[in-house]
Length: 224
Image (cartoon, rainbow, N blue to C red; front, side, top):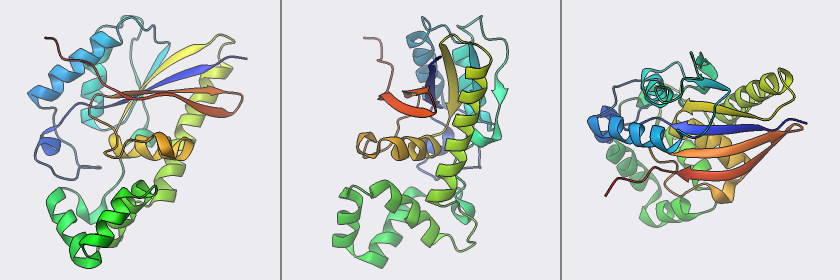
């Protein structure tokens, strides 16, 4: 039975990332730092032969995918999949991260806030915070975003498994929170406290209907 090796990549740093603002369905270009980091990631992955590539419909993920694919002539064109797009922050899109922290501290108190952030359920707590602060009530919730990304990656894996009996390497270029939601579901203890870094890659294998975490949050090293 074929094993599908998913290489889950978070896009490079963007202008909104650098400004410490929430960026979900809002979009912005990669910074110079983001481009250089994506180039380093491309070199790190250059020896992997990819059988297919899938990318979010948002520009920052597509820009990152183009940089990676420039070193992979075997990949002609990625499949754009809206299921890979970032968590929707609703009315909080573009909000300063510092403002969110201040509001939570004000509502919960510093002691409770710190306990929640340090708890095993910190990722679920983080998404609860976004929902509680979004006055428009249009932000996604943990169940919704987890179901969306899991169904998307399962659909991709099943399709790739059915088209060949051989193992495959599949490039997936997406976003920090949505990929964190997926990894949190399959292996909550392994998810880093500060979630996934820009231009990080995590590997998950899919076989016989099951996802298994192989590696998480690996980033390319800077040249000395």
